[in-house]
Length: 359
Image (cartoon, rainbow, N blue to C red; front, side, top):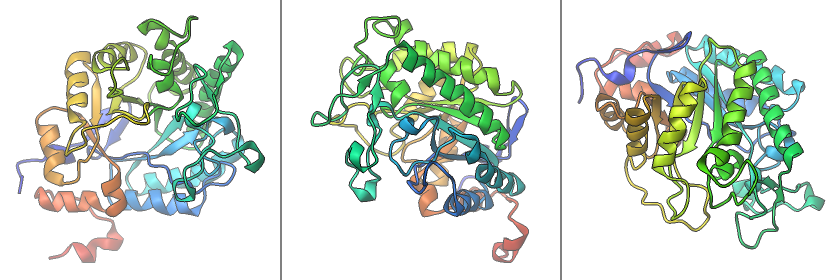
């Protein structure tokens, strides 16, 4: 067992927001919405992680437009009517000691697919699907039809959609916005030369491929209060020759820091359907370590971090500033309580659960 003031339970302050510990719940799609609306499933799912003691709870990829959904069952924030239920959720999260976060997303060419348990297949228009958009007319799967290449008006709409989504996120009570620029979705598609074959100001050079991400950051910062943190999730590498890579990720992270981004959530992959990723314990931690050290920006580590000892080791080694946990949080919403016990930390439990804390 690790003792001696565990880093995992040291508070972290970013701008005006203090996280009581370094444990974040990664955004994980629930595919449980109708017309983008949150419901009681989201309240209980996210709320239980707050009761379990996570310092930050981030909602799933939340679509900034109907066409930006991965599936028809995705959570959304493209209209004012979505705010009311989200506000109920953020109120509960804060009341139970967690900072409420939201991941703003656009699925790009990976949109209009069915939920995983419905097959994950392309949803045709006659069955409620829509035409996906992308930087270039290159489908994610070879047997899918080409997505619609965004023109200048389409790009402007994407930027405006993120801007308005940030405005609604604030009204809904979120204290952290994370921009989803990873896993092969729209913003990542613009970054990678494998999916971006444009010859205009949004394609070709690193500067051009990064342009949309930076314009989205600027558009969100126009609406998102300066005292509140702004995060971004990126895929640090495509794991594919000729694709987006670690060096470009460091270069981008330096610019993002200058534009008002506070933390980079370091994931990888998702752009190429047949790529082989060497998945193993903590396999993505080197990305957060590299970006933190070379770009001078805070990072979150993700990827098969499943034990308290692993999480603590990453922080002690200064490979990241926060640990974002996904699947392990699905298996155990009370992971922070387990971690505190393993690391000999006397963590506050909800009053309602105190009887279970006694030995």
